[in-house]
Image (cartoon, rainbow over all chains, first blue to last red):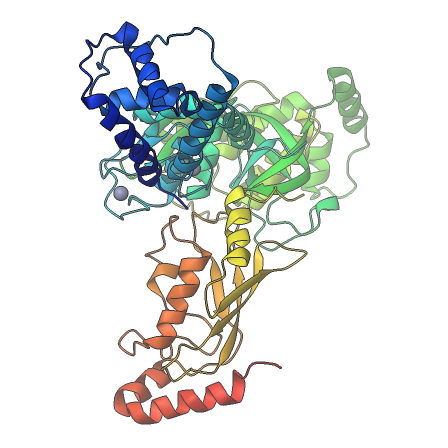
Length: 429
Length: 153
Ligand SMILES: [Zn+2]
Ligand SMILES: [Zn+2]
């Protein structure tokens, strides 16, 4: 394959040959007449017009007769001949075909899009550079340490290269931009929700996460570009079957998290603060660039009338025959009592200065909510019990069902003589 | 549902077919374009000369951000290749760079056959033999090559 330098050398031979005829001609050179003069000269040589205007301009430049600030050259005839046009096009194709491989990105093998040049002088697409940085702090080409800001967004494009590309390959750049835009959404058909398989999140509750794995850094970047939301799912350690999905590596019900704040550390790790929105169930899933994506359906509570109907039916049941049937008793408690039961337990525990209700926990999660729908989620966010227990809250359709679960937890805690509360982790998740 | 194959993998595969590396072949599976059947000929002048070694190569989902996964399927007596065919090669681990490619990695493996390095062993027993009695080790390597790595007619 020819290099650009070789193309130029090839054309230069022609130029040098031509210029010989010009040197002994003493012509006053002005931009406006240069082309004319040149055409005449070439004409005089007898091999004129099929050389084309590009070459004419090039000859002028090589001879030092084209001043740097001239942006137009006038030719003797306003018309271009077919031969001239063909010659111009051929030369243009020669140059662009030869130059094209030079602007291929060495990571994605496509024409570089939004090229970013490193301190060591190497250039990649912006998206490719970002992904390299997710994995390594070294230049992929020369392995020197990349001195780029932790947020690559703050590093400018290589402007000169962008101009050259936009001039020579506008269509390719446009097509590439469209492809990258589609890819960077990180979706495949209806698999349009990014899934972070890690831990539990709950509606309206705050979750802090530390994002350090390369694939999740990419996911985070894409979420921030889009609607700032992703789904969080608990890891399915024991490969338990998940409905139609089978034994997938995550539990099928999760919570959408909205990113509130992001802090990027020098090593590229991000600390994010999120707030839970609605719950969802994964209907189908796939993999994009190493992380899971899915088609999800929201899980909503039943309406208030239905909730009240269920409450009336359950509270109306005759008392349990066995007076030690704790769950039977919980089943029959009015919803308002279930909420009060939980709130009182919290007050009691605060009175005993329980470690899991320290001020810094409340600073993160707030005071226990009065809303019966949300109280169990808050409770699960602060209570140090197993995630598998907490997961039960996600697959519910009524506030009442969730309050019954939390009431059962409280009963169990209270019957345990001695409860050891594990120290709370600094970061949840 | 699988993502479309990245252009990079398509281009690398094409080039492996149109401009093959001497002594190396890499053929993608029909049903999985990320999985390659690889053969590497033992370099001339090495104790693996005349042998044809089969390897499997897999391009993970985040290739080229992470290196290809490669292992020998043919048994080989080599201090940097263990019994499971795993290869101790820096460019397949910490020294991987997305600017490297299948072609360069296979060349590195071929070079490793030409220059076993018992100082950085993956197969302790073989490495020890290599250091204690190199002549014997080379003889073993030749025998294994005859035994396991004969090209199929
Ligand atoms: Zn690129
Ligand atoms: Zn570099």
